[in-house]
Amino acid sequence: MTQVLILQGPNLNLLGTREPEIYGRATLDEIHAGIAARATELGLAVDFFQSNHEGALIDRLHRRDFDVAMVNAGGLTHTSVSLRDALLAVQRPFIEVHLSNPATREPFRSVNFLSDIALESVVGQGAAGYLLGLESIARRVAAGELPR
Image (cartoon, rainbow, N blue to C red):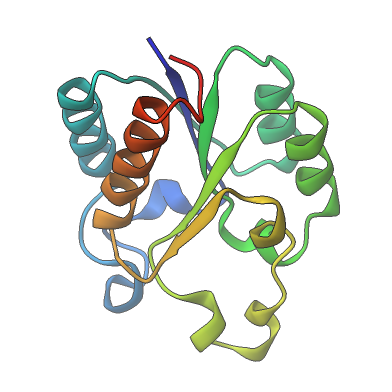
């Protein structure tokens, strides 16, 4: 069974209360429950990890116990060469997910250290973006593009 790591970056633990007009009202636990349910339907195994610490996210990637990842790096998307390097170093494909569309927000958010190395980016779809990412992974597994 394809192992999917859901990697959540800084401040995503505050979803539901943090700027709900931008990020929605769903909590991280609610989003994870939806991801887990859809993953089961698609025949994917998921593991969740969230940290507000860049090094912890990198350490989690270094475990390499997953086939593919979905990564919402939060603000680290715009600042972390180290996270980018880790994603390249572990040699695992990933889909980038953002609840909002960072490119349409503050100018500094137009810098993205991850999008050019991601399989694809799902942005501006709210919590549904994670489900779209899972469905893309399932299609790629079925097509033989990702490990079973």
